[in-house]
Length: 426
Ligand code: PLP
Image 1 (cartoon, rainbow, N blue to C red):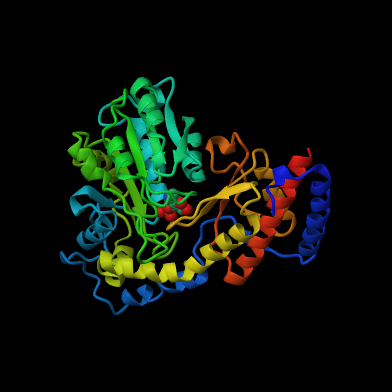
Image 2: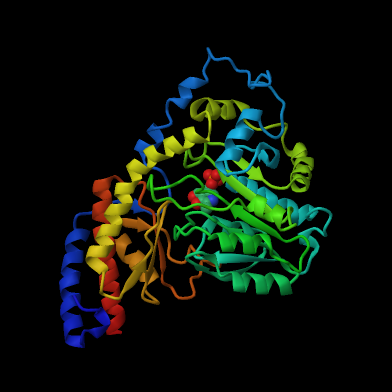
């Protein structure tokens, strides 16, 4: 098939008629499919069920230092959970605090503390005229919601296959004292599945921000979420790189086991320098006496160590790889050569990122919905929900079954074709 742009009007009209007929046929099936949110499938959740039997009424509830995990105590996590979660993100126990069930929650609280109390003695951000964050985009919609919630101005930075455009990042942070942070998903990024190169990580570690209270918000949500056993991306440890660069306090790293064990019932972690952790502890001691140690114990007894997590993640990969491949095969088969879209082929994470012709994404998402397929809202991957080119669509292939997914992908490509033809017809 020729690129759509090369077709004359008559051919396009013919194509539109054909595609409309196909679309009406699938629409008549009255389907209800969801490719909108990055949730694990039921079979993935089943993998972690034995964890629930490992800590029960008959279990020894003491952690390795003899503390009874049923009782109050320990603000920063039981030792074995600190070891497990720190090794998951390639750092060590000294650099972490184990939190509750959600890393997004830690990120929200962190921004909130910076607003109210500042950073290591700086002026609280809420007292400043202007606070700005850099937002590599497309990115994670909930990050952008957090900064929007606090009235922080968001500045879009282009994402490249090896990470955010660092020329832009360096230039902006070095000149503008109002820029206090940047959102990063450094490994298998949401939604493109890109991993930051070693050079990008080192450039981050060596940033010279005008604002002394600037922080990199390093959300390593997909640190162990490989799709393949052999072909895996690797990421430098930002904490070590910041130490080497003489900037140990520059980064705050977040992660969780949400998509390793149970979303909403996993364990989360904050990693940072000693000075940053001391400050966080000073404040969270007012907020909580301690997080859920029983859940920490459950996770440690189930996974044992980082090798246990890696083994477990290969079981996830076996379940979701065919789903990614089903979508990618459909995109390749149906859209290659038409010049109406581009898509990423990630080696890990939870998403495929699709870029349509400019000005088509909203219409495509609306079209798929007409045929019963819910996608993430177009624009969601940009600050304020506004994609300047109206072209990015996030595809989340993990939740539907393989059969549902095959159907949903067919509907998606049909919608892309139809909307693109309509756009070209004007
Ligand atoms: N960070 C990223 C990049 C995500 O994609 C998600 C969930 O989709 C989260 C954080 C949420 O993590 P948690 O469940 O630990 O709050």
